[in-house]
Image 1 (cartoon, rainbow, N blue to C red):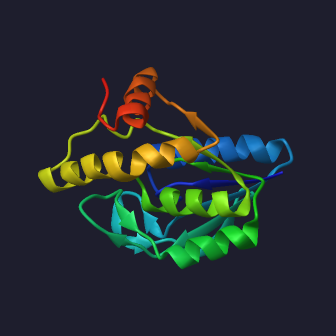
Image 2: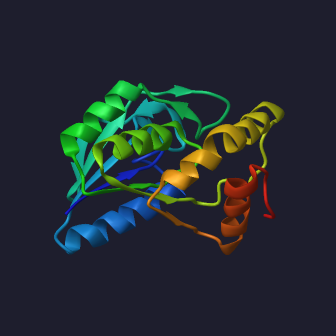
Amino acid sequence: MKILYTCTYSRGPSGVWNRVYQLAQQMIKRGHEVHVISSERVAGNKSERAAEYDIVNGIHLHRFPVISFGSDNAFLYRPWQLKKCLKEIMPDVVDCQTYRHHEGHVILKECKKLGIRCVLTTHSPFARKRGRLLSLFVKLYDRFIGRYDLKKFDAVVYILKSEESYLNNLVTTGKEGDR
């Protein structure tokens, strides 16, 4: 089976990347082909860029240039690059390891068009402090995009139990739930 993960980084110190790497290694041991789509950015290093394509311990890494806005984890991708990469890989399943991230939104929409199963792993996206502008963006995203995207995933994997009530309330009412 071909598995594709999306995550913000695929190099440098990042908790999400560490989780994706560990999952990928387990899937490779089971005989699966694993791909990762991420930014070209290196976690923890604002100036360094990772190779556009690389294979690390059997993981096919597809990295893209991004535009950063408001955070070390908030990036805009060129959607056509993500769509082209997804069509070239044609995985059996995609696991978006990021909620509220541009790459996850683009990939989800394209998976639905192509009939590819798409899962979301949430990584507690609301348990951190943000500035005013980014907090406003988060509220707008949840209300006008996130609540609809959440319904489209084939499954949602919650890292923390508290995420489940928050996101379920968001889907049903459009408002933030308990954290």
